[in-house]
Every structure is written in structure tokens, then in C-alpha cells.
Image (tube, helix red, strand yellow):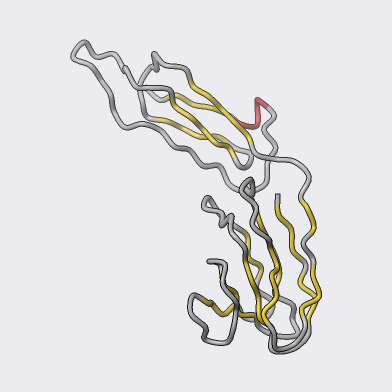
Length: 154
């Protein structure tokens, strides 16, 4: 039997794509699903299907949403700048690399630089949007030319 949770019907309006975490099969000898509580973290609209039989434990649905905080910043040429501060409650982040040039980012809290340790290059025009894994530490950026980066977190 498939347990179907329809996020749109319970008015979960959130920011990204639906995700779900569920326990694997806990079918007892008598055929009853004795799984512990299943938790769904809906980060979008749509539906999530769980092939877990008829649950005997509660199903908890939680949504992340709310007003995003602007982190839009002017980045000077040739120096590492923190774009996102540490935020232990961050569930979402997004930014766009300006058409003026590419950016180097450090997602692990250190300084960003060209070909630096833990740095990645994002080409001009790239839109970065967090998926199911969201970095909650500081994120730094390096721009070869001065740019303004539109950025948000929530």
C-alpha cells in the first residue's frame, strides 16, 4: 500500500522541491508495518509518496517557508568577501552570478580566491539555488571585477 501525502492539499507553500526522509521497511511477522514515526520535510508544493504500507506510527509533516532575507552585496574587485554569514537555522539560499564576470566561492568558511583551497568557480550568469542540503556556515566569494550579487537566504 502506498501512503500519499499531498502537500498542495494541506497548503504547504515553500521554496524548493519536495523531499522526504522515511524509515525503511519495518514489516513485522504479522504483516503490520511497525515503523517508527516518519518525518517529511516538505520544501515545495506537490506530493510525496511513501511505499511503507499502512503506518501504525504517526506521520509528521513540517514545512520550511517564510520571508527570505536579502544578502545582496557589492563585492569589491580582487578580495574575498563574506556573502553569507553563519546561520544555523538556514534552510535555503540562492544567488545569481552577475553577467559582468565569474565568481570563486568557498562554501566551507574560509577565504575565497582564484583556484583556492575549497573554492569553486561559478561562471557569469549562473543561478545557484540550494537543494536538499544547505550549507549553514559562512560562505565567501571572490570576484576578479567589482560586482553586485543578488542573494537571499531563509
